[in-house]
Length: 134
Image 1 (spheres, rainbow, N blue to C red):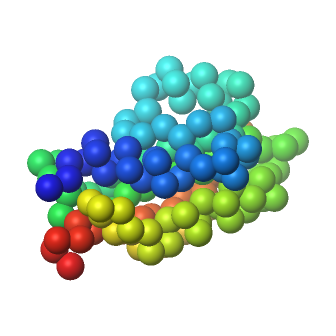
Image 2 (cartoon, rainbow, N blue to C red):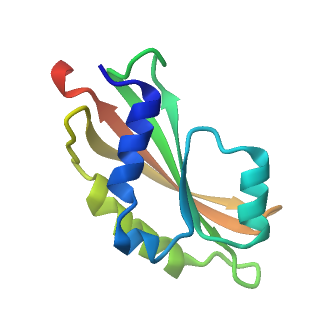
């Protein structure tokens, strides 16, 4: 049995590799406290946030994770080059990844614009499965 907290920590562990560390200041899991989000956006940091969209919250059998890659806009325009660099570093780490407790499969990718924060976000859905249920 794997809990949602443990699943988020395992996904963070898959992502938090040297190639990704060189591109972002942090990978935040669960609900980001508003103060942490405001600190990161005020400092114009590139960061990743991961949380669950769907799960039963007692244990993970199947679920959908939401991974957001945040990059500050440059002169009011999305920094597509930085977004792509982070996505290309993260994607192979999560595409059909396996740990002892879970398997991942990439879902849809959407670009979102946060005009009030002057950020652009890649929203990547990640399907998560407990291997004992496959």
